[in-house]
Amino acid sequence: MVLVLEQRDKVLVEETLRILGEQDPLACYQCNKCTSGCPIALVRQDFRPHLIVQQTRMGLKDVLIKEEAIWYCCQCLKCVARCPQKVAPYEVIFALRILAAEAGYSPKNITKLLQSFWNNGMVTTPMIIVTKDFAEVTRQTLGLPAPVVDTEGLRKALKTTKLPTIIENLKKRKKVSKKD
Ligand code: SF4
Ligand code: SF4
Image (tube, rainbow, N blue to C red; front, side):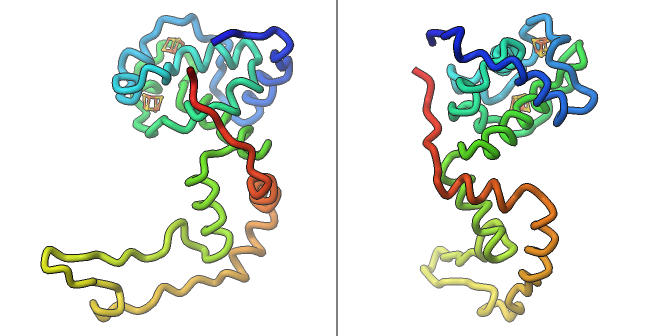
């Protein structure tokens, strides 16, 4: 990846620190312990938590929030346990996801999930399972009641958060990209 100096965003560290609380990406000394223990880094060459932290320190907001890589983390928290500093790449990655969503960048599935939560109060609709005999099993066939969600109350509560703005931004969805 070619880094362009104009892409540096001097307030990125401040923005991530605002979300992070106790963690401090500036304390990272690039020992690589996070990446060497990360299960996603094991299978994806383009996911390197220590580099994400480094790019955050460098203020490369424009690069980071537009890339799909920040959405690969499976939240196993191994990097939190392994980091000898108060950095916790998981937390940094999560802060970057918030900044990305606020700016209107997220993978298509995440956008769908947030919209579903806003519309129905559920991140996904109840599943229909097909058995090995090709019978469809639903909540109804199992005699379970349909889920009841107070969507009005939920939306009232959500309006006190940034979610409505995030959803509006995501509707104008800007594509996230994969690294070369
Ligand atoms: S383990 Fe912590 S200090 Fe080491 S590279 Fe990762 S974030 Fe930086
Ligand atoms: S929390 Fe995310 S970044 Fe950290 S080790 Fe697990 S998958 Fe990797």
